[in-house]
Amino acid sequence: MFIGHYGVALAAKRAAPRTSLGVLIMAAQLVDLVWPVLLITGIEHVRLTTTDNPFLRLTFESYPWTHSLLMTVVWGVLAGGVYAVLRRDRTGGVIVGALVVSHWMLDWLMHLPDLPLYPGGPRVGLGLWRSMDATMIVEAVVFAVGLVMYARSTRPVDRTGRLALWGFVSLLAVLYFANAYGPPPTSVDGVAWGALGGWLIPVFGWWVDRHRTTAAES
Image (cartoon, rainbow, N blue to C red):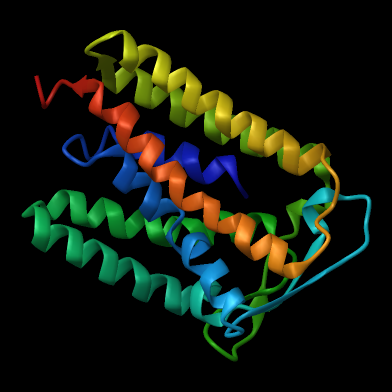
């Protein structure tokens, strides 16, 4: 799943109005932000697969430290705990931790049975990725619901706040359709280094949120 994770982050703003959208996005995508680092360092492994289905072009051979259920919970506890302590916001910390764990749950719906329950443990996955159409419909619905919830729970404080949100949505749409309909990756290194660009998206989300306000902030 790709834009679905961002949809969940957008929706979470209603539950954690004091928490920046940038932080919520980083939490929802945390394991995917750490994953390319572990690929580059050789700690986790993936290989390219030749297929017409763009969602099955990567075979995840080993990623227990970022994408096992146990370690995702550990990442969630750490991220939520650190946020709660630094920001003195227990509610925000709970939401941040839950968003980290939500990544595994959404991936479980999409992935083939390659998600370990714990490092070295059995692998699971419902495999919605086998159907390109079903995948894109589910992701679009999750993202749309999250976007509507965010738009209704915040309001722009200036023109930038309005335009930046739609620029953010447009960027994610372009990235998603480029992945779905663009050429397949040519190397694992290219996949890893390209995925590092994902660190810029929470920054974009933070900037959007800086130009919007919520009822709590008002």
